[in-house]
Length: 151
Image 1: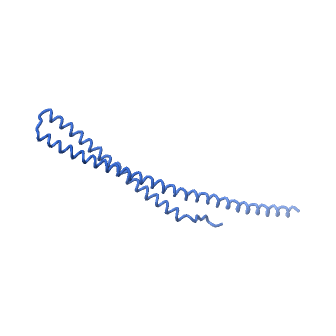
Image 2 (image 1 turned 120 degrees about the vertical axis):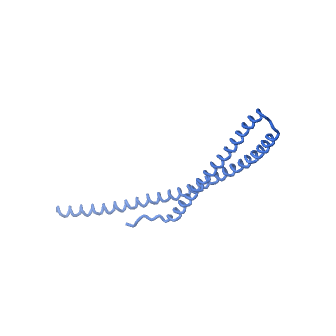
Image 3 (image 1 turned 180 degrees about the vertical axis):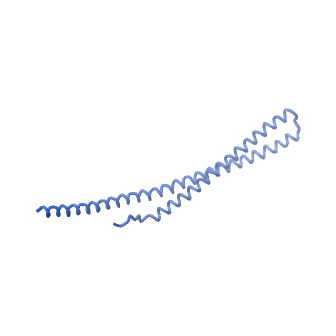
């Protein structure tokens, strides 16, 4: 009996490889997104903590120089936070693209695997029919021999 052969094995392997690559890209996008979100969170915490420290300084002694420094710092931090928000947004978009690409490549691979599974079931059914034919023939031959021996 000939061995099972799936003629779409090469495209299936290509789809599996593509899915693996997309999974790696997705994990990198997740990592980048988390990193950028963490950076934004730390910037916000820094701004908040600096504001609290500045409030303490103002209550003890308010100098023009301190107000000027804080004003420059606050403006710079606001600009950096807005820039970081844009970076986080871009990372989120990249994550969504990677997710969609991964899901798409996964579906493609699953389609090929379903086809392979269906063809393998057909192969097994044909194999079982042939084995049944052989078994039936052997049974008939043995029955014929037993019939000849008893007569």
